[in-house]
Length: 200
Image (cartoon, rainbow, N blue to C red; front, side):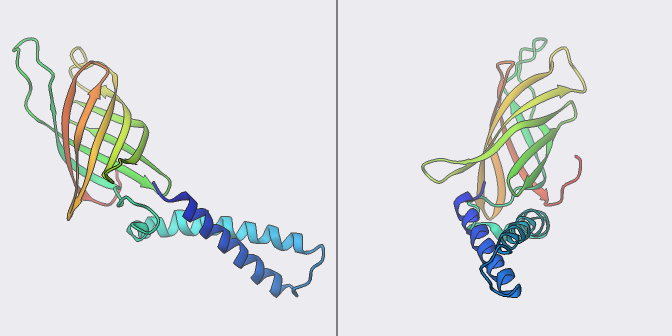
């Protein structure tokens, strides 16, 4: 998701800088009070990490971290697209039409989760992440649990896996395949309609 070594180095430099400032403000003496300066520096650095970076800056300007701290663009928001399954309906012996779907991606500083809905079912990720292959191509991969609102006899609750290529040639596009525990597969393609998160 992000370059942890670089981020930890940044936090270390911040901690050292905060310690020096606190130490100088408190007189710059080497005595037992220096232990208090160390704990003060640690507390301020944790505040900067958890509140300033991960809560405030990430929520307001998540794209600011792209390329220098993370190699993946911000994916959060609402997406719309289609699913095309290889499932063959037993009564007709034919595959179904493409299914319209919406996904909501919650992309936090150090985590990502995905929720998808169609007019018949909904799914939630329980393991997810962004990976990069040897060719520097990025993929959003996740495992999910799906439950049906309709047609539970032909679409029972099941788990599955998704691998979506992140295409960033201008507009962001997610496209790839999914695999289910029912031994079906399919294609998926999504375009982002909003960067704001709200329940789909």
